[in-house]
Image (tube, rainbow, N blue to C red; front, side, top):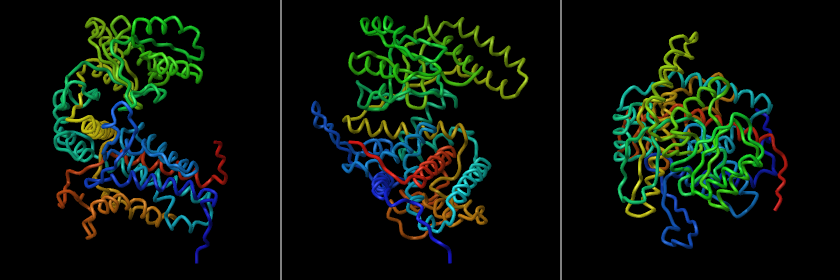
Length: 485
């Protein structure tokens, strides 16, 4: 008989309860038959827009706030973990919530005898899982793959076809931005020259709160190569921007907290159109990124810049001679590169500087409809970009079930089995399907048929699990809560 130990301290029970409440709400949206959630946000100017229906996990998560302050800590911890997954790979809110809840409520956890050994076993499991999934992953090689990934995420053939059409015209390295349309009640897109980087806004306070995106039109691009701490050197240029109603994007390797607060104050209190973004990359790659960005500007300005929590995209029509000169420089660097990864990086830069991007303008009969469609397209684009990075596996949870036997020698095998089988079970549960179905082919809960076109980005699965385990480890090593009202 195994000795049971109390891994979650009694003082955390209200925190766990709040986390479970938030998780249940988010998880209800999972899968092809996920349920709608009603979100109510007081809107004195437009009362008709104060209630919204959505199946988007990100929107649901960010709207959860529990009355009990200690329970709300649990909800906030879950939301932060899910938000981290979305920042890393553009999707994965529901799967992160599901994995965290499973870890915290599993009966198998209470059977552990040594907490440190248990944590080591969890870490080993994650390492092995990453290796297995990367080996099992298939690369995105066709437009049909793009369609499959998009429709699995958004559950809408119309949206999936829209994304497929864009990638047909732009290629797989496309920079695709998303905006709510102010003039149309239907969704459409425009091809446009764009250059994208994986580095987002330093604070969500710079975002438009409707869509968590910051859009700056006809913006100055100011790049500093050192940490920005003091606001003093920037008073004059920011005052000029404010006086001329000019937008500005400031980039630096890092920003001090005082400067971030200064910039946010200017945005919120004075109406300055501003955003702060860390210069993407490190070392020599950061220097090359700066060169690419400056090449893409016209007299240090761009027509538009779209910034999310994960990335930013510059839209402009720079001087062709600047582009040609930079491309020639990069080609020379690629030809003389010693390492393969360096050569590939230079070639990728050439492709990005020459490529075409697109902006999707999301419309709807009502603002509620438009926001719902925006959320779905945002998820689908995030899933596609994630799959393009790391590939994809069979969806609807079946890939995870198939690899369960590979962990049979693990000391925490019962927990691993429960964890990896949970997505498949939850998707069926949300669709009220109680009969047994095959677990080697994805089951389409909407059509009630087996459907091999359902696939999941590998990156989303891995980051969901990693961030879930990370929060779980923090909680099992916590014994006290200090809440200051």
